Amino acid sequence: MKDYWIKRYKREGRKMFATGGKQEKLLEISKNNLSHLFAEAGINKVKNLIDYGCGYGRLEPFLHEYAEHIIGVDLLMGIVDFDIYDFVTYISTEEFFKKDFNVDVIVTYTVMQHVVSKNDFYKIMEKFYKSLKNGGYYIGVEHINPHFKVPPYMNNFSVEDYEKAFGKKILYKTEMLTYEKGHPHIGFIFKKE
Ligand SMILES: C[S@@+](CC[C@H](N)C(=O)[O-])C[C@H]1O[C@@H](n2cnc3c(N)ncnc32)[C@H](O)[C@@H]1O
Image (cartoon, rainbow, N blue to C red; front, side, top):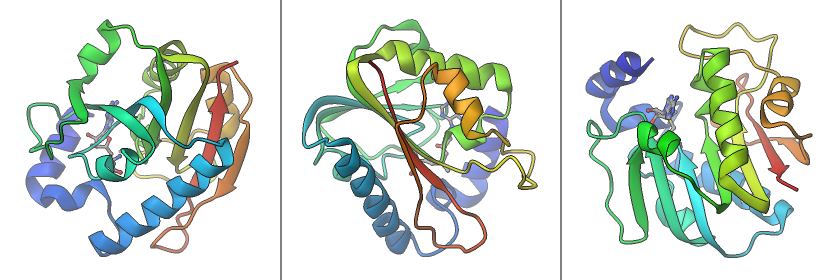
């Protein structure tokens, strides 16, 4: 799917990372959604957080309110013009899989919904589990609806798929705010215990 994202980035530029409306409005919605989930998990400020599928770094200033240091991971390393901050280290997906991590929080914001191969989905979720400290949280905002007819660049995984792949039950889940109606996203929290 990397080719798909490269093509789309060349065609749409930064707009492709969060689609469906005005960018400022979308950022507000994303922040509200994540604030809700951080509050629910009881996260105030942690040491380190992985933003997996970070895009160009749209969410990093906001995530920095909750984490001292952020590791941004994306498929498009070397292709995207990332926003640079001294509290973010950007790494490629290859590096992510090679290195060991022990972080407090992992976030995915509309990323896992684009991992179309079930094998890759499992590989990533298992790596999330390994990369978290005991007591750490994986927080996702994703399209999860096995009955929705998705385009080829999206998957149709269910909550049970997420639970099986992460190896734990979802601690909390709720419908999130979206700009477009009819395309609901679910916000959820996993805890590694
Ligand atoms: C809809 S964008 C969301 C970007 C960012 N989370 C945000 O909210 O601004 C999806 C992102 O996931 C990345 N992506 C897709 N598949 C991925 C994978 N298997 N591993 C890592 N990143 C991936 C894409 O390159 C893209 O940056």
